[in-house]
Structures are given as structure tokens and as C-alpha cells.
Length: 249
Length: 287
Image 1: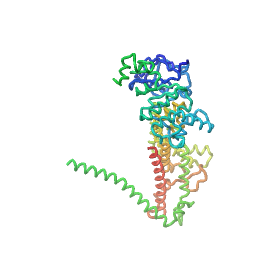
Image 2: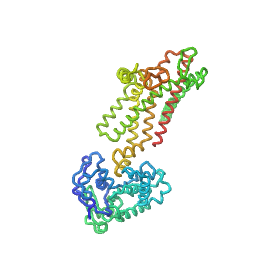
Image 3: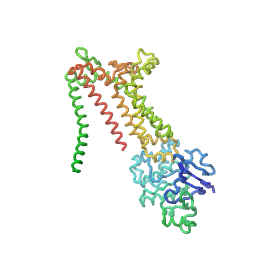
Image 4: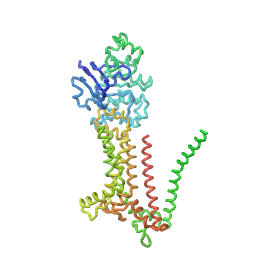
């Protein structure tokens, strides 16, 4: 089994604040790895390290290694890396384009020009994102006309359309109602057959529902990483226990 | 007592508010009253599309088409020069430049806006005009092209600062979303940021052009002021604004020439108004 991500002694600073401290862990293929922790625990920073989105922040510094399929992420062409590692953000972020164009955007950008092939890929991606039935008759409408939950699934479809290996979810359901959340979660569970998923979430129950393994971060440190059932039944660390029981955070 | 104070202040502010509108209306009415009188002498059609402007011949020929074309030609030239450079500069400042360079550039652009137009005109006259003359081997360098280049400098600060604002206010999330899909920096700018900021950029362009078309001093100094139908961009032209500025002093108050100059004022007013309203529409579309 090839390990998807190997992270070794990762430290990250933004300016003078250290956001991650000595994190070492692995992400396995075709798993959903949930990352939980209170705000400012470094979980989003960890996620954005995987596709090097942290590079955009001013004052970003790091030490240690992130290995993606045996190669250091710093050595991989950043656009290629981000194409292989898709990301879905906390707030649904449709681009100011039509529904179709939102999904087609990435595909086109990566050089596909054949209209029929693009349309196929868009349809396929929307089906995988469980949105196709709801939007197939209104593809040319602005993406902003969709509901919040639909927009989020559109963003998932957009990510899928470029055929990534890994999908990073950054609190994808924080702005959604329970029914939309359930739909997004269903989509995630089905997607793990084909993709590796890293899910950062503020919702401990969500981690319990969909995660194969769960990592708990606190103040920039990885406190505990284990099978989800274990984390939620017999956590090794008192702090993990406290957090999942809602004692702080 | 306190209530009374509130009352007085409220009314004072109200008066200030009304006063500005009142003066605008007053100016507009005066302009109309003086300008419309010209149509007792020439028909509006003759006035707007007449090809000769000889206001002091007998009888006076009051066709302002050469002046309109002069203004349009100079403005168009200025737009062609200033829009790509201005928008490009805005993109550079908003998206590419490092913080330090950004500050320097912004200060530089602001400084450009501070140069009085007469100074720009003067500098253009001694540097640009001979240059144009030599490059194109012309009898005179006082041409529409010289005016366009100089006016492009004047439109640039407006275009850059407003377009930069528009680009900067594109949600940062769009950028991250595009990057996360594997877009390069330029793909992100071109496909996501520019479209998202398009209405603001269009407004910036319109306001820049508005500034150019109303500009008087610099064009008067370097476009040559020949009120003839312009055949190319390399001949002297005269703009609407320069005509008013140059001739108002010698026009007999209450005479045909005088009325005609006011009528030119109305034309200018309408053009500027139209441009500003369009810019406003674009700006509101953004919100």
C-alpha cells in the first residue's frame, strides 16, 4: 500500500506565531481521515499544507517534510499538485459564472478544448457530486442562484471534474442545514472508493459519522490519531476525551 | 434647549444639502437659457452636423462637427493608450506587486494625479510635440496624437486607482478557489478575478474617459486648435472644451458666437453626464 501523504516533523509559522508544532503522521489511500480540534488548533493550516495553499499567506514559513506519493510537495509543480489534490472550502465558493462553466472551468484550464468531452466530464462530475438531477435543466443559470447546499455540491463537482487523487474538505458543512449536510456526507462516503479524503471539521459528530480514522489537533500539536471508533470510545489522551465530550472547544 | 439645537443643526445640514442641488440646477438652467438661443439662428441639426466652424464670419457658420470629432478623436486616442496601461498597472498593483513596490507605485500614481493639467500641457509642448513632429516627419507636432498621449497620462490615475480598488475587493476566496483547482496565477487573474471585477473596471474606464473629455488646458496647448474636420490623428484638431476656453473671451455677450459657445457647453455637459451615469450604473451593478 502506497501511503498518500507522509508528514514528518512539520512545523509551520505565520510571522512569529507557530501554527503547527512537530506534526508527524500519515494519510492512507482511500480513507476518510477526519481532522478535529477547536479553532486555532492548526487543523486548517495542516490541510492547506497538503496542497500548498499556505504559500499564499504572507509570512508563511515551514520546516519538516510533506511527502505526497513518495515525492516532496515542494518539488512537485504547484499547479500539478493542486490538480491532483482538490479542495472544497468552508463556504461554498462558486465562481461568478454559470453552473456549467463553474464545473467546466478547471477542465478547460487544464487544456481540454473538445466541447463534447467537456460536457461529458461536467455531467459526470455533477453526477458524482449528487447534483446532476437538480441542475441538469438549468446549466446556464448563474451558480449563485443555487441554494447553499447545492452550491457546496457544485464545488465538490468542480473539484471532481479535474480528476484529482485526493480531496481536501475544509469544514465543508459549516454553513449548511442538516439535510444538505447529510447529502454532502453521503457524497463523501461514496467518493472514498475512488479518492482519498481529508476532512477538517468542527463538527465532532460528523467526524464520527464519516471518518475511518480521526486525528485530534490542539494548539498546533497532533494529540492523537487512531481509528475513529477508538478515538470516540477509548481515547488514549485525556484532552481528546475532553474535547469529544464537549468539555472545551 | 437641546432639542432646539438639534433642530437648528438638522435644518442647517438640510440647507447645505439642498444648496448643492440648487446650484447645479441653477447652472444647468443658465446654460440652457444661453445655449438654446443659438437654435434661433441655426437648426440643431446644422449645429451638430455642420462641417464649418467660422463663428465670426458674416453670416457666422456654426457647425460644431469638427469640434465634436476633434474631442472624440483625442479622447479615443487617449483611451486606447490609457486603458491597457492603466488596467495592466492596476492588475500589477492589486495582484502581483510585493507590498513595498505596491506602496511606491500607488504613491507615484497619486502624484501623477496631482500634476496640474497646465503643467502637463506645458511639459508636453516642449517635449512631446517636437518628438511627434520628428518621428512622423510632420510640419507641426501639435496634433491629436500629442493630445491623446498627454491626456492618457491624465486619465491613468483615475483608471488605476478605481480599477485597483475593484480588483482588490474581489473576495479573496475566489482566488483561493481557483488556485485550489490548479490554476496558475495568470489563469486566476484572467478567468476569475478580472470577470469578477469587470463592472468596477468598466466604471474606472468610464470615469477616466470622463476626465479626458472634460479636460481643457492641456489639449488647448498641444492639439494645435485647428477647427477643421480631422482627416487623421496626425493633424491639428480642436476640441469642444478648448473652443469654449479660447473663444469665450472674445465673443460678444449676447451675440450668436456667445450663444453657440454656451450650446457647446450643453453638448459637453450631456456627454459628461452620459459617461458618468454609465460609470455609475456599472458601479452599482457591482454592489
